[in-house]
Each structure stands twice: as C-alpha cells, then as structure tokens.
Amino acid sequence: MATTNKYDRQLRLWGSNGQKLLSESCVILVNATAVGTETVKNLVLPGIGSFHIIDDYESDYGSRLAANEPFSNFFVFDHDGELSRAQVARDHLSELNPEVKGGFTNVPSLLEADFSQLIQDISKEHGHGKLLVIGADLPPVVSMALSEACWNPSFSSSSIPLLIVKSYGLIGSVRVQTSYHPVIESKPDNSKPDLRLAMYPSVFPELHEYAHSVDLNSLDNQGHGHVPYVVILLQALRKWRESSGVNNAENDYYSKLPKTFEEKTAFRIIIKSMSRNWNNEVNFQEADENAYLAYNVEELPPETLELLMTAEDKMITKKSSGAFATVFDVLLVALKRFIDQKGYPPLNGSIPDMASSTESYIHLQEIYKKKADEDKNDMRRLVEQLVSEFGSDFIPVVSDDDLGILCKNIFNIRLLKTRSFIDEYLNRYISNEEKEEILEELVAVTYDPYEVPEHTPLLWYIALRACDHFYDKHGYFPGKDNRELALHSDACELQHQIENVVKMLNLENNDLVKSTLCCTDEDKQMIFAKEMTRYFNAEIHNVSSVVGGVASQEAVKLITSQYVPIDCLYIYNGLASVAGVYRL
Image 1: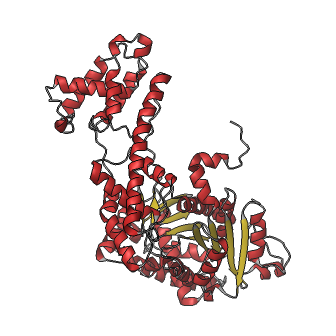
Image 2: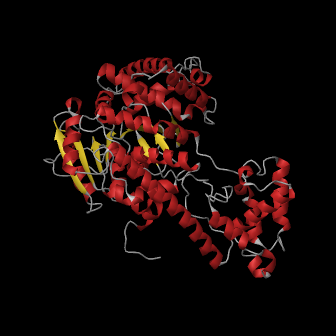
Image 3: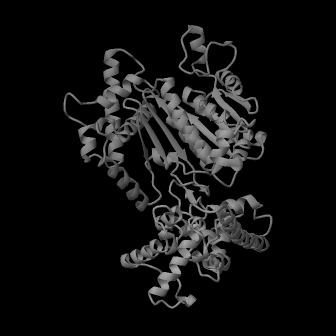
C-alpha cells in the first residue's frame, strides 16, 4: 500500500512506539572514523532525534589534506582545510536526513578528555530521551575512560548504553556495554500463541461458553470447515476427559490434562474423529498441529521468574538509597503482584490467523480482547497502588502503552547486563562463579571452530586485544614503521602479547589455540601477529561499512528496547567473511 511516510518500512519492523523512541534519542559519536560515521549514518537515515560528534584536533584530517592523500572515510573527503574532521562529518551526515539535528565538539585531545562532563553537557542540550554513546577506533586508554563515564555517569542513576566499535584492517568488532537494559519486546522467531486453552473455565468463562455453544453436528459442511481450531480443541478436550473417565471438577482441571504420550495420542485421535473430511478441512488440520496448546500450560521463563522474585526488594533498595524507580521496575513489581493474586500472568489478547469464518474469528477476537483489557485494567490498579505506597516522586509515570506492551510480551521479557569494558580489558570479574562461567563458554566455542580453524572469529578477537595491549606498552599500534626489520620486531612483540592474552583467558592448553595462535610449526608460526602488524590499524571503508551496519542494528535495539542485543561482543573476520558473538 502506498504511503507518504518515509519511515513506513521500518515502522513495520519496530512500530510507532519504537519510532517514537528513536526520534527522541541522542547518539554521541566519539572519534569520527569510517566505522563511527558508518554507524551514525545508519541511525540518521531511520530518524534518530539528534547526533553529536566528539573529536580532537589531533586527528589526521588536516595532515591528509595538506599532503593531498586520499581518505578511507567516505564522509570525510576533500573539503575546506580550515574545518575540523568532526564538523565535516557532521555536515555530510546531516545532509542524509534534514529532520535529524547534528552537532560537534572539538577537544584538544581524546586522551585527556573529560567524557563524563562532555556527555552531561550534550545530554542537557538534547533534553529528554534515550542517550547512547559510540566509541570508534579508540586506543584502549580512551575506551576505558569512556567506559567508566558511561558505566557510572555522575549525572544519572543508571548507566548509559555504550557501543565500542573498531575496524582494524580486515577485522572488525562491536562491543556492547550496559549494566541495565530491559527488553520487553524481544520478538522471538518462534513465539507460541497465547490462547490459554488450559486455563480454568471459571477464569475465562466467555471462551469456554462460546466454544461449547457451537454445535458442530448442526453445521453444514462449509460451516463445519470454518470453525476456529480454538473451539475444536476445547470441545475435543472435553470429549477426551469424558472418555478417560475424568471428573470435570474444576480442582482437577490442570492435573487431568493429557500428559503421557498415550494420552496425547488419544487426544489427537479424538480431534481427527470430529472431522467430516480430514483432507479438505484445514481447520481440523490446524487443530491437530496445535493440539499441544490445549494441554500445555505455558510458564514464564526462568530468567523472568528470577526478575520477578527480586523486583520488589530492588525497588525498596532504590527507595532507601535515594535513587528513582524505572518504568521497568514498576512493571515487574505490578506483574509479580498480579500473578500472586490471580495465579496466572496477564493475557496477550491477540490471536493468530486461522481457518475460520469472518463472523467466528471476529467474535473470538472480541472475547480475547475483553479478557486482555480486564487484565490490563487490573495491572493499572496495581501500578496505582504502588504509587500510593512509594510516592509519586519515586514512581515514574507508567503509560497505557507501557502496560499494553508488557501484557503483549509477557513471556518474552529479558534484562541484559554485560560486563563493563574496563573489567573485560583488565580481566576483572565480580566473582569466581562469573569467571568460571565466562571462561567455560570461551572454551566451548573452541570445540566448534570454523571449517578453516584459523578463520574462527574468537582467535581474531584475541589478536585484536593483543594489539591494544601493544598500544598500552608502546603508544602506537604494531606496524607503524614499515621497514622490514621493524615490522618483524613488532610482529614478535605482538606474538608475545597474544600469548599473554591467551594466558589471561586460560586458553594456553587449548588444542585450537595451540594449533593456531600459539603454533610452533614454522610455516604457521606468528601468522596472526604478522597479519595484524601488516594492518597497522588501517581503516578500510568497506569493512567499516559491514561493522557499522551491525553496530547500528545493536544501537536500534538498545534505543527501542526491542529485540535482544548481542551479549556482549561481535567479531567480524573479513578475511573469510565470517563472524561470531561471544560473551565476555
């Protein structure tokens, strides 16, 4: 269908609520490199609220202009040499979408910048809305300073989501940092319909009354073939219970559902026996395919249950510490109280497509919507109760949209917490349990290497991290001096750093690592160190484009709280065009 809304396609992906959050957001880019501007480009086009570039006067922009050298960054090309790189990039990015406000700040040196103050100033200028920071191709000391400023911002009670992106020759990485990122609309690929067919009849009487009011025997063949499978399943369930001699007393309802393989098979036989012409009645085929919905009581995932169990205690702790509750905090506590009172979570309210007459489908929709509205109203009363208990100065405003989105995604709630970049880089862990869990996951990855083992992305992450440690020691990345002896010396030093990183990750005895990164075979020795030295932190814009595309997708997830962001590192190996995601 034709539309005048230029954001029409993306609205179909993340909806009007997601677009609203995007349009209110402010993205801060630190260091206007190719991968940084590519990431921001992919956020300007779909309509973020504003962006702001922080760069230093010591970038190579002016020297390249003076020497008439080509730029690897398509957003910084031949221009007036009096303008800074940040301003040039801002101007070119702003041309992509006039509705997006762009700004820039030049600092004497990123190495000495006060990122906490800079981010606070930009945040005040931008006003309300989601704030997200992107650090592009930064030396490790700058990345750590930026990480600290976002992890514990002096002007906010919650962390600021940070993306650290890097394009290093043919290798790229995207690192997500967030200490608290709720995901309500995770949108899993294989979500089950929330039909509550196994719910007590007295809890959902309208559904059971409607289902058993349909007289299948009195319908003509056309009408019989257009009865919704919800009705078929509930009638078949009653027949199964009667044929099994089950007492229909309500206190036995859940315990007397088909459980064994034989009982489930008998239930499906009843469904088929109710059909007049199995091959032609699609609705009965759908009932057979979805038979599990009649006896499976969907439970909340363990991670959601864990969130609910601790929600109220965390809110009380925030209150006593002087912090403020978030909308997510309030929704969790209200949800916990709702389940405690009723014994079930709020109903989604939507039904899937199914073979049905229009009249029957609409009537079924109305039944589910009525029940969902009742549950949503009960959630609203619980939220108001929390405001009364804790005070309106502590509890934020929870809109009807917030409640509606939660109720529609009740089984898909997630909370993402990553380690800070500083902890990862300095190899610090909160506990021995966390350390063992992460290191075990990395070992598990090595058991399933890429078909060419040297192409496994995890190995290139280790090499990339070793380059950062090289920079810490020497103040430059390996490969600065392109003389043969100097290159060999840097490669040898980088190999030493690779072996140090391997030891930090407890992988020195790992078979994959010993046969690749730490190989003693003369033909394969130091191939990773030599390759990374050859790059000398070079920017290749097509690699930056791939990495920037991935980074911008993660940024949209963090801004809209839709879909689940990576946890927590993405590594792109441009040598073989393969990638991996690792939790660190």
